[in-house]
Every structure is written in structure tokens, then in C-alpha cells.
Image (cartoon, rainbow, N blue to C red):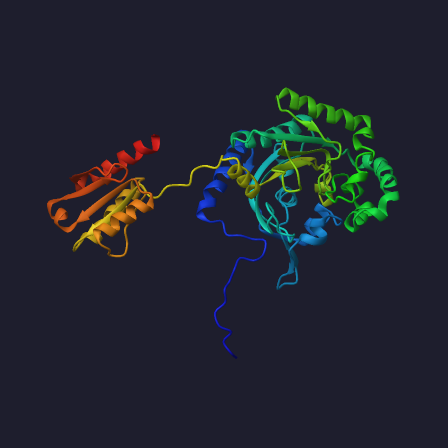
Length: 432
């Protein structure tokens, strides 16, 4: 068999490497999201990366783009049909059922930070693997809980410094509301079927409410005068929607009603919402979205159980921060870089670096056996604040040299005092 030669391997289409210059921004977003979730009483959960494919088919919906076009599905060696996770909610609801969480105090409030996989056309802000932060509050149907979840999403955006945002809000009622409304919607769009896109023609039959938020320019002219779900809610559903709005107003959260907002997954009921830039345009502007899904757990085999949650794309939120100049500065290099010169200095430098790290000071060496000049040049480029010069002659005298790389000032101190001195300086620097 001939050798095909070396290959130039690249990331698969629609994926990317999260490089160090991006990692800090992602962690910044996750840190703020986790802290706000903690303040709202959410615990954290991490389900497996793959599940039974039928979990998503039943939960997300057979007629959705996710199930029809975007899931990564495979049969394992045991013949079980599995899928990489295309969204988080169905997995969390499966865990709620499997682990008997209905026996816990309700609502059960869970947050997660997970990779999500969808086979879709890569474009700006959309990847075939992306990272999602999400929350789910399961077990209680209460307008105050809806408002709390929306408030949590709003506070994450606010604490990240994003100001130019708005909340879009709607109610899509429950199954009974939609059974009365959908025929009216289909009747409205039916005369225009030959003028809308093929995907939307398919949705007209299986998911007609999706036509209301279609981004297809061939469909959009017929959206403006379509009947609205909010005009056809039963009194119970309308009262619930009014209560959600009252709680949001009590929290002082601004919102904009958007009767065409339906979201793209079959499991949503009643409250749906998105957080978008105030100047939103295009399909990749939503930074956070979610809604109530009171029928989902029943669809995947459990008893009727209410729930509400949201998902936030970390990549998209991080990109938004970078666009607006709100991303944190990239982490600097180590606090200390140790330069060794002369016989025995390298092992002494290794020991000093270990002592510093054990005392909370980030430290590394200028590896490679280079000249002192080259090592100091490396120290400056590394972003370290201090260079420690460990020389063979100095070691014989029991001292090392500490150089401040910002001021170029340097002094000799006893080796025995070096760790405590550098620990003190590094601590003071972090406080500043």
C-alpha cells in the first residue's frame, strides 16, 4: 500500500479552534453567566455529549430544521441510534425524569455550559459546534418564574456591559390556543404558497407558525397582515401573559412585544422571548433566547410538567463584547520569569519556580540555555512583570537579582527571602 504522504489537516468545516486570545473572552462570559445563575439559586448540571436520537426527535420536534437537517446522528457498535446534542433543554429534561427530580422541591433550577452540535451552513456567528450557556427551571408554572428567568438573562447581558439591547416578548399560548389559531394562519398564507420559498411551503403544512418569523424575503411581504396569536388567546392564556408582563414591569425590565415571535422549536408554549441588539437586523443577532415548554417532559415520556429556560451562545456573546470594545484585556504572562546563567543555576531556577507556584505566584523559566541577554528579551516579550536572574556566582553568595521589567530597576536579595518578596509584590500588583 502506497504512502499517501503528509496531510495538511484543518479544523472541520463550521468549527474553529478556541485560541488563547479568544479563550479569556469566553471565560469572561461564562464567569458572569454562572455568577448570575448562582445568585438566582440555580445549581449546575452536565449531561453527556450524545443522547438517544429519539430524545431530540420527540422533544424538539420532527418537523423542525434541527431534527430534519441539522442533527449529527450515528449508530454505535451496539446498534443504538445516537445523536450529538443539538440543544440543551431536552437533555436536562431527560435528566430531570431519570433522576427523580420531581421528588425534590420545585421548581428544580438547573444551569449548564455545554458544547452544541448542528450541521448547518456556517456563517458569521454560527458554527457547527458552538458553546451554549443555558438555564432551565422545571416543575412550576408561575408568571413570576417566567419573569425571573428573563431577568436572569437580562442581568447577564447587563453585567457584561451590554447596554444597546432590548427584550422581545410574546405569548404563543398552549396547544388549545394554537389548535384554534393555526387554521386561521394557514388560511391566510394558503393563497400565497406559490410565491413563498420551498422551505416555507413545507412549514405551512407541518409548522405554520414558523412562517411568522421566516427570514425568507419571499415570505416576509405576507407576514405583516397575518392574524396574530395574541388576538386569539383564551382568557386563561391572556391572563397569564398579562401576569408575566406585570412581573417584568415590577422588576423594572423594559420589553417590546413582538407578536410574530414564535421561536424555532416545537416544545415552546406561552411565554417566548429573545434579547437582541436594539438595531437588530439579520438572523444572527440574537444573543439570548428562550421560553416556556410545559409539554416537553410529557413528549419525552414523563408526566405533564411545566418548565421554562433559555440558551445563550457563548461565541455570539463574546463576539458582541469584542465588537463593542467590552472584552477583557488578554491575560498577561506569568508574574515571574526566571533566567539562569552558569553551572548549577538551571536546577536552582527550577526549584525557585516550584516554590513560587506553591505560594500562588505564576512563574516559569526562560528555557533553552540561551544567553542572559536573550533570556531577558524573552522575559520582556512574555508579559511577565519581574525577571529573576539566578547566576552561578550569585548562588555562591546566597543571593538572586530581581528586575522590574516595567521600570528596569533591579536589586539583589537573599535567596531565602525571594519567594516571600515576590509573593508580596505579585499580590500587591493584583490588588492594583
